Length: 93
Ligand SMILES: [Zn+2]
Image 1 (cartoon, rainbow, N blue to C red):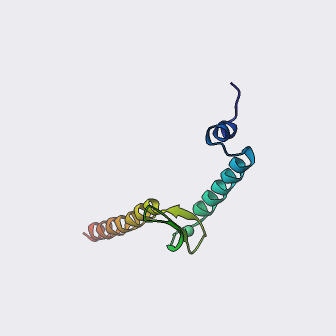
Image 2 (tube, protein in one colour):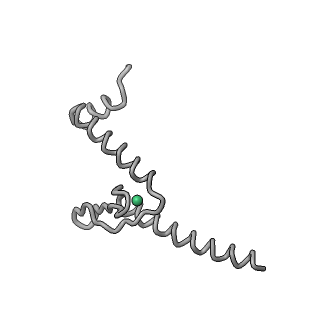
Image 3 (cartoon, rainbow, N blue to C red):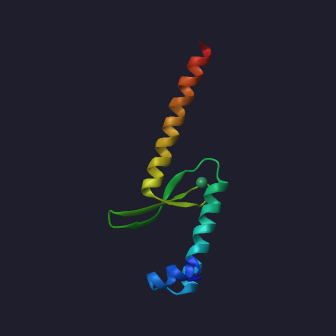
């Protein structure tokens, strides 16, 4: 009824409340690293499990993301460059 979210997750996953708390703290710390960085460089392979799971670490901030997030981030950088190039050309008139 008045169960806290982490306690609920603990019950559902079978992991201890302490483990759930530790995971939550790691996630929060990782988010803080990622938010503090102005331009990520996901060049360090942090974790690889078979061909499905692959995590990458930013060489600058140490934040870790899964490979699909890395791909979208890098695609966003390419699109931003394209957008900047076109805007510059338009302003030169
Ligand atoms: Zn970074």
